[in-house]
Amino acid sequence: MHNAVISDTSCLIVLTNIDELQLLHQLYGEVITTSEVVTEYGASLPEWFKILDPTDKGRLKDLEHELDKGEASAITLALELKDVTIILDDYKARKIAVHLGLEVTGTLGVMIKARKKGIISSIKPLLSKLKATNFRLSEELEMLAIKESGE
Image (cartoon, rainbow, N blue to C red; front, side, top):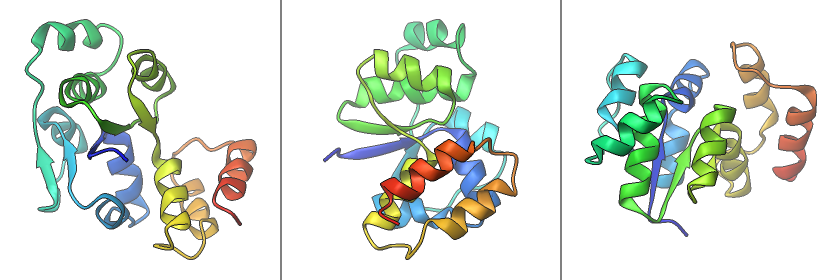
């Protein structure tokens, strides 16, 4: 079990858009993010978010050559904090984070975990709301999420 979870911007936006941001708090308690992610998010976050910024500016700059600033800051912070799970939806960011040895999940992973822990009774209504947003969700990925959630 990881001690902390760090969220990138996309998860925050998606969960806000489907009115499910509280899932993060129900699953993890405190959620860590960076001030760069908060800027990208563009709104105030609940008090259960902790804002930390990475100190390794060299690594941050290197990652910014490949990723957006929010993703780069979240990954750099995850590398500094150790023993964390990072929530990333972007394929390239996920690939880089896994290559760097980080434990990665995504917004769908958060929903699946919420279903498995009994926080939500079904993942299907959330997937329906998700499809109504601009979140890219293939039919195959949707079916996999339903299967993984035990429905």
